[in-house]
Length: 252
Image (cartoon, rainbow, N blue to C red; front, side, top):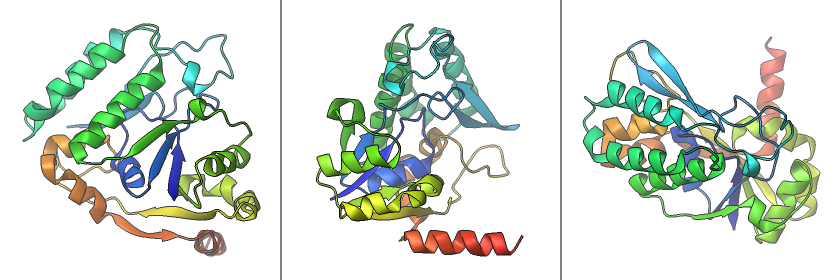
C-alpha cells in the first residue's frame, strides 16, 4: 500500500500529478497550519513575459495558526480576474476550448466568498486528474481524525490506512530524514519523488518550467499524462538523498 500525503495546492504543477499517479491512496493534508502566500493559495501561468502569479484572496487577519481546512475565500473578485488572465494567455492554445469552460464552471461555483479554499483546490485537482486520466482514491486528513505533529502525524495517517510505503515530494526530505526512525519503527518504507521537468509544446518561447498543469493540458491535451510520466525516474531512497546532500555540501 503506497501512500502520499500532501497539502492541497491551487492549480498544481505537473509534478504534483506525477506524485498522485504513483500511489494507491492520496491524502490531502488539510489538518495542519495554513501558510499565507504559499502554494495553497496561488500558482503561476505562462505569459509572453514569463510566469505570472494567480493568487486566491483568503481571510487571514487575526487568524494566525488556522488550519488549512478552516481557511475561507475572502472575496470572489479573483475569479473573473483569473479567468481573464488565463483566457488572455491561453486562448490560442490548441486545447483551450475543450478545457476552459469546465475550469470556469469550477471557479465560479467554488470560488465564492466564505467558501473553503480547500474545497476549491480539491475540485480543481480532481478535475485536472480527470483530464489527465488519473483515477485515484482521495482522502482528507481532517476526516481521518489522527493527531500529531510533522512526521508523527504522517506515520499515524499511514498506520490508519495500512500503508507500508510513504512516497514524498523531494522538498520534504529535510524534516522527514530527521525523524525517519518513526517510519521504520512502524514498518513503513520511505521513498522520495525523483522528477525531472520535461519540455512540451508551449506558447511564447522560450520554454518556462514549473507553471500550473493548466499550461500543459491547454497545450498538449490528451497527450499530457504521457508527458508527465516522461519526467519520472526511480524513487530516491533516504540514503541516496542524504548522500546527494552531503556531496552537494562538500562541493561548495
